[in-house]
Length: 303
Image (cartoon, rainbow, N blue to C red):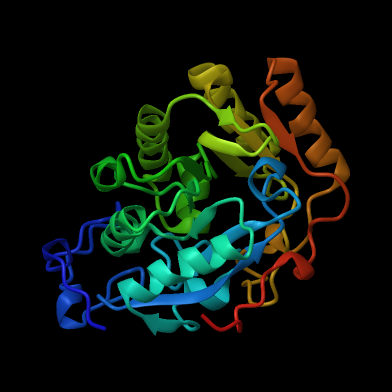
């Protein structure tokens, strides 16, 4: 099931630009060689309402990650420790199986380092009649040159914008250039898919939703992110403000003591109120206790 693509001879698909030869089994920051490793494929009900609705989103979770945040909820797969090797043809089959289960869309989760594989699979799937919207669900740390490989194949982009503060991005995601990369990436995403569109059932068929996870003790960063997004895109995108930060047991409690608790209702309320004051209308907020481990998928599912 070896996959070959010349771009993997000296991989620079993400802003890390490791330059390793993944075709020869080498791995860089994402911990992935040229094999296609999928950790989970199933209907997923915890995305924004216009993505999941009551039927669920057809989520395909890829193993490994080019970002590697210290607080990652999906650490089991982001570190490349869980998953099954599959072929491009099997990935295409999974897309159609999720469609048969009633999925609203195909949701590619943590896909950045598999862009070459995904492009080939989507070209094949479209040729075979796949007509569901395809969602590209990422941490936002992307290269525009790589995203252009998917132009015309992705219908909905669902990136994070985690930080404006480079100090925070360096501390929590080891990427001082995070904002610069994410800002350029979101501009490219909007260029590709345009303004939001929905079907008669309120399910998004095209557009960009930018997520922002509010972190403990960091409401200032959150406000700056939302301000930047709204001033630059207005109603051309949706902004999803998330309260589901969950402190994981493996976090370094001494080095990241501020991340050892959930955010408070007051912290989240301050960020949401700020978004309303700015005039944000196209947005999503979370209600209730979403910050619990039951919202983290079971990555033991077969693919």
